[in-house]
Image (tube, rainbow, N blue to C red; front, top):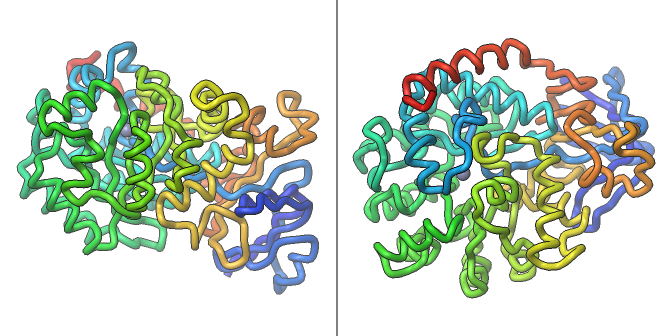
Length: 443
Ligand SMILES: [Zn+2]
C-alpha cells in the first residue's frame, strides 16, 4: 500500500465553497484520507513525501472533450470551415489510421495531457481500432472515458470510416464489454459522431444501449451555424432537439460545444440533466463562436471544459483552455462574467459533474480518489501570485506543473513524466504522422 504526504502547499480544494488553506494532503491506497495542517497524523509511517512548498495543490484537471486519435494531425488541417475541414482533412486522415498510428496518436495526446495536469478525460475515437487507444489509456495512468466514433450515414464520409448500423452497434458493445471499468479508471462512452454522420436508427439504438450498460453518450452538438442549418434542412429542427427526440438527453449525455444553444434549448437541457462541454479554443479556431457558459450555469446545466482535438486547437493544454474560457466569456457575457474561481470550477468539479464523476473526483476532499496536480507559483510569469487562483488560471503555464498524481499513482515528478518516454513518443509521432498523412493523401 503506497502512502503519500503532499507537504506544505497552498491547497485549493475546488469544492463548492472554493476552500483554500496552507497545509498537507494525505493519500493512502489511492484515496485522499486527510487534508490540513495535521494531515500527516492520518498516515501510518512509512510514507513518501511530495514537496509542494511554493506551489498550489489542485484537483487534477478534467477535460470533457478530447480526440486522442487526432493528435497526430496537429497542424495538418488549417484554415477551412468546419464541414469542409472534416471532409477534406479529418475524415480521410482518420480513415487512413492503422493500429501503429492510432497507438502513436493516443500516446502523444496522453503524454501531453498528463504532463500538463489533466488526469481525467472524455475521449472520442475513430470508427476502427479502438482497442489500441484504450490500451494506451490504461498504460498512461489517467482516468479515461471514451469509445469508438459511430458513423453509419452522411455526405462525404469516406469508405474507410463508413459502417453499417449493425456493425457500429456491435463493435461499440464489444468494446464496452471489454473495457468498461478496467482498473477503476476506464469507462465506456457511446460516441455517435454528430447527427450528420448518424442514422436515426443508430441514434435511437444508442439511446437504449448506453444506459443499459452504464455508459455515457458523447457527441458533438450546437457547434457551428452551418452544421445546425444542415441538420435543420434534413429534420426541420435543431440538432439538440433532434437528439432529444431520439432519446439522447439526460445526465449520461455529454454534448461537446453547445455554442449555438438558444435560451430555450439551455433550459430544456438543464431540465433533462444533459451535460455540455465548453471548448473555447476549438470554437475560436473554427470560427464557431463563443458558448454562453455563464447562462448555461445560471440555468443549472453542468458544464465542463475541453481542448477538443489537436488539429482544431493545436494544443491539449488545460491551462490554455482555462485562460481562453475566462477571456472569451468577457466577449460573450461581459467582463468578469467568468472569474478565475468559476473557470477553475469548469476545469475541476464542474468537469467531474459533467461526466457524472463528482462523488469520486473533481475536488480535494477526504474519501475522493487521489487525483491532484501541484503547480509552481514562483516563476517570473506567475509571481507575485498574491491571489494564487488567479495566477493558476490566467498566468501559469503547463511548464509550471511540478507533480501529477492520478488514483494515488504518481505520474509526473518534478515536471518529468514517469511512465512516458516523451522524446521517443514525439519521434514516433513524427514518423507515424508522415505515414498516415501520405496514406490519406493530405501530405
Ligand atoms: Zn470534437
